[in-house]
Length: 162
Image (cartoon, rainbow, N blue to C red):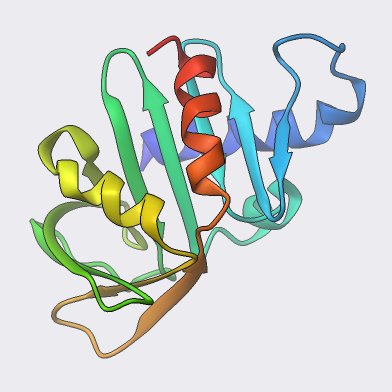
């Protein structure tokens, strides 16, 4: 929970101060509804406006890149939705390609999975325009527009120094 607090606080501060950031490599990068947020030694791509994500971090997708951890995918459901322990996450692209991966809970509303463990995930995220995400044991699913990710992956890795 403490890790999520500092992450959300960092995104909030960047969101509030983004209008006053200098024109440099630390500028926010925007593409459609996605924003890349430089966080020093890492970067995050968030699929919702930062102000909205900070106010209610549900129904959201975040891709994190860092030298230390590589690429990570986080799917935010809603408070109390995610149980503890390893969780089976199902990802389906609009063309029917499916990937089932074991994810770790991130608080009680999100799951996280490392790309380094699952190389097909990057292929799945780069191939389509829509992605359905669901927890195997739950009846609900979320759908995300992911078309900009093809362009954003290179910027995300450059930003994080990967």
